[in-house]
Length: 443
Image (tube, rainbow, N blue to C red):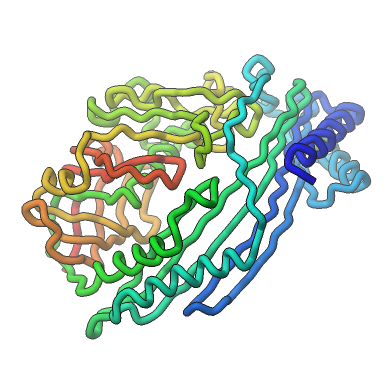
């Protein structure tokens, strides 16, 4: 069965269960199905450790009895199981409390003509291809230098999926998608010092991923660069987040401006809409319809149309990220963010990596973060870190076992520059980020 046939079959199931829910008395209903086929291969020291094949599919349905809500799910898509699931959801709705904010997205906001964003590039789920790619990445890394003494493994993943969402407002649409990834982790040793690092590649088109040779080479280079790591003195210094991890800073911003955090009053950016939270030169755009984009989507998890948005304009927060429910809680319309964000593009300062180091002068380049010491309610930020000490714009030596701390509100406002070395492997595309000053705790 090809993707078009599978899509039509799932849409029919969605249509059937919504009609069933309405027949059983639901005032509104919505349902979704995600079916995924994939393989996962892992190797270690060039030997296969695991080989997994998945073929998963599940339906989730939510019904509304006035302002009462009931939800149920099933992995069994037989007619009898679907009927039972709908009945359970109807039954649950009888016992839940009324919530004036519950219900479907307004029909006028739904995407009536979803664009084809070219998210599906199917390849055979070939275990041998995955095994060969993972082993090759490990081999290149292990053969690159005698100081690469061990492997923590390589992995290859391929997933082909179809997602469909429908509701009783007449929406029923979906799309297929594909995703392929390859990663490699190796261990290096120099005298008594042992370090590990990794590299990875991910793309919707398999042939556009980095080659196994490149992934293995980078994993070795990154690991070797960390050997001989030292501690540094405690103090306040400029801190630069490498592009590999800098998107995490804006990931915290996503959490802080999401409707769920805001209506619960659990965000350090409460009541900051229309206020400056980043430097005046900083802009963040959302572009949901990038062809082949890793976070592209024609509509959100409620069927609401996704649109280009300027999240940050000249440092000013222009939009909160709203769903139908959080929007009603806050007397604001949803803006297509049920299920998350869609391709954030963080504008850069026209400085490449070397220029960013030169701008910093002397300080800490962070390439790895550890721990979960981030409080979205207060903005307090404290995490373990590793990276490199920089003097006069040049990397001097690797650094380990340090902690960096500040408040996210101050960190965002005190961004000095954002690099043009953009990492495109996630939903937030961003270059390296230089923060004016953070507290660093070392030796």
